[in-house]
Length: 217
Image (cartoon, rainbow, N blue to C red; front, side, top):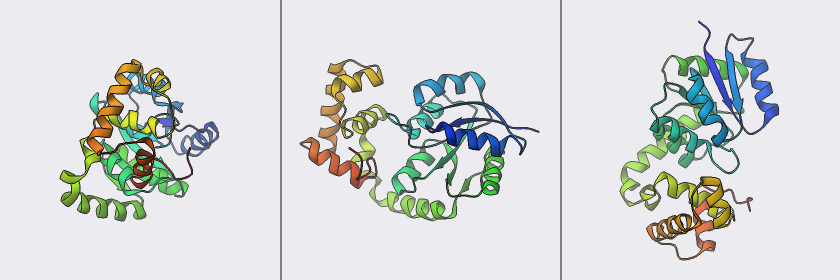
């Protein structure tokens, strides 16, 4: 039985390479895209068996897409395919419904096998990520209650990600389809929850937590 796939990555060349690898292996790619806003309605409409999700999608992350898929109880199963191998992202992906997490350095045969496993409802992880996830989940049992980041709502995390990338309140409002006043409220609330008083400290926090790479603006 041929499984249907939807490819989510902000690099069109990579999506083309995935098509070239996966379609001869018997999978049917029913759609593709590079940003959350455009791909989510298509995933809802097409209901692919498996959605391959990169975590780096420009203004909004793949974690947000996973969260939306989980919130809507979509039947599609999610497999993360990314270069990011940080504990925070691995943990967030699992908590938001990903059945698999494969690094982009994996071989074609590994990826094909991972898609088959996820399509069948089984968990599959790249070895390095599996070890990291276990360590992160063990640590979270002791620190979850004390971790202020866990107190943020999904919307507050979205605003946080855009604020630390230097986006203005007006740009954030347009991106998230909110009013500027609402964005300011979210920003004030999240900084209060995190116990942070200024943007510089917020950026340092974002780098430390893996929300923002040290090289990003």
